[in-house]
Image (cartoon, rainbow over all chains, first blue to last red):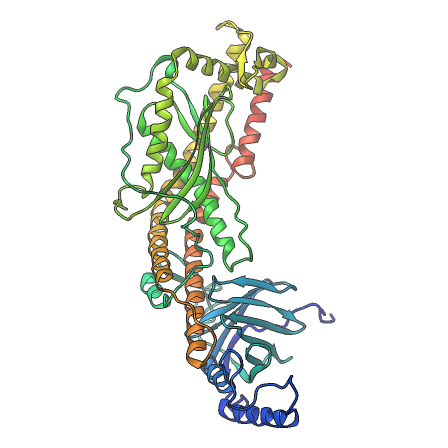
Length: 207
Length: 360
């Protein structure tokens, strides 16, 4: 049967960061600074130039601030993703889950005056955008390789219209323990988990 | 344990996405309102039967969707069946009334029909609109009851908003007290004929008219030993047996979910108080340098984590009470569908019985 062209890629699984292939923040910052410097030198005298190295934008933010921030939000070693037809949930230790209830359109949600979040599919990429006060935003683009062994995460933190810092991370899939359990949150008994499938007569788990 | 998880998550909270805004409605502090109880049960024509329809839920449309909104809607739906039972039990305890039942729909055999709308219900506030109308169409009560739980109630013993129910019961009893015996007799007569007309409109519809105020009045009284009325009486008895059964189901539902619901409200109250505390201390930060950006990030993350914990808790609540709801909706006496459908099917069956008894 030919593959369904509308089928969304499957991100489900446990993913471990591949540091060898992922950007190193310090190196990336140096490259970014050099690129900005070149761009600045070429465009000197023009009014629409981006921010120069070390220069702040009108919000008092420098590219180094954004790089440090990108590093701060990229410290996870592991990512756990669960996926159903209408929800993708991306869990990382110490941070709120990125949850997207979506079919095709972008979904927007507001968290009071602390920020807002939008998510949705752009082709085979799953995108989240978090807007923070002060016109700072974080854009995540998740994509998965055809063989589902590699997860690519492109992250962009930006301040205002012209200042942005990009970071690319790679993750490889691994089999986590306790995959055979289904858990449900209860009020009176906290989290209750049960094994998926029946036990065979010899006590082994039926798949 | 869950509580401690929340405390870890609640770092510089400023708002909870799905937690209702408790500042818009004027709430009464939950000072204790004692229930006015009759020493003697009512007698003669002063015995009125009450039917409480499952409450409605005010649909909120407050801008962009929040993740997890559906689960709170689900809890409100459960509360729409739970809160009427608390009100029912309060009215029974007040001892001023005949039968008091919770039913999925308005009941034509009831002398007084109570309906309610829940605007807000959580651990800290209850805001509901309640109305009571007698069978003639005359409104007895139409009032909003908004109470705030100040935490002084004994959670193990009493509903934290028992004062709201007591206040309503007292208000209703006050109106009963000023109604004359003749007025109440008229209500009972209209109820009887309205039920008869519900069974067989072609036979009984012309016994009543609507007066200039829109109230139903009897224009043709049937003799007490009228055979048609006797048949209606037998049907009404069967109907009461059925609606007593339905009422029992709602009672069982309330008993089943009470413990977990009480726990939910305790958590809910503590969380909302946390949010209110954080709102008071909150101060905005622009983007500026790394410190300001990371501060904003932590605040956003903490808020988001809190929302997600809250949603999980809410899911825990609904998953634990789901079996009780399922039981309520199971097939009864060969009727099918949910409890509302069964109620309709039963009324249709009684109409057919009635026609059969009449030999049609």
